[in-house]
Length: 374
Image (cartoon, rainbow, N blue to C red; front, side, top):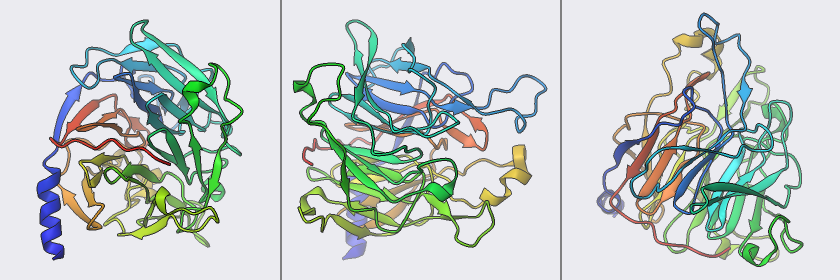
């Protein structure tokens, strides 16, 4: 029976077709940007990289955070060219992000000095060609390197760090219902909006988890992998996680019970990976660090071979994972932008301290059903 379900899953999801789109105008690329979609345009904001002048040692230059924003119009048809838009108020990277019908929700992040509790909405006006920023309710506390997903206009945030270092990682899980946002006046968070604490993600603290809403007309929020500091280990020792949990809003009760379901473990860690829904019953993870070379990075430096490309597909009904043919690229630390028939991947990290400006549209030939609900 299980074999039959796996075969049905493979037939239903179809192959992946990777097509290059115009590269991000930053020639170095960035890791940890806010990336989302609104009004048919992909929006990229912030991120960080390592600008290296000719002759400089990449491992000696400081990391630089950015406030630049870019917009790629007509993302779902024939993308033309990236347009520069109004920058963020300040440089930010490593925040969580989720796209909702009203815009792109940007959550937390850090500026290289401290994490922030700031939350804001980015919206694209195609007629005017302008990108607007609207403040939203702040998080209960600073948060960076978390993951986020949305079901309709309800945004969920999982895990992340409250400050520098993995010792500050947590297992928190929050949601913000923005379904009434259109009824509020512009420029204010709104008195009826607040972050609601939900039961913690099972499995303990984690930084850089993979978070995605998937599973057809009644999707769940899937929280997978990530990393945390290894208890009793060396200062740079980590646990690269493979556990997988799904939150079903329909199972969550007023007494704070229910909601979480343990799902099949990933076949490998996917720290800082990207994920998207795939058809009516699948999700896909297309990038992430397995941690195999984590403790050797400082020794390998530019001899690091890069993160090996891979793709995994999960059948949310049969609860089974299967590997897919390796994609042509492996760009992590950048969120996938879900489309009706696939996803877009913009920039990201290809090996430690190296970014790529490459942008890809990945199609599957199958559409994702629209979903609403808390």
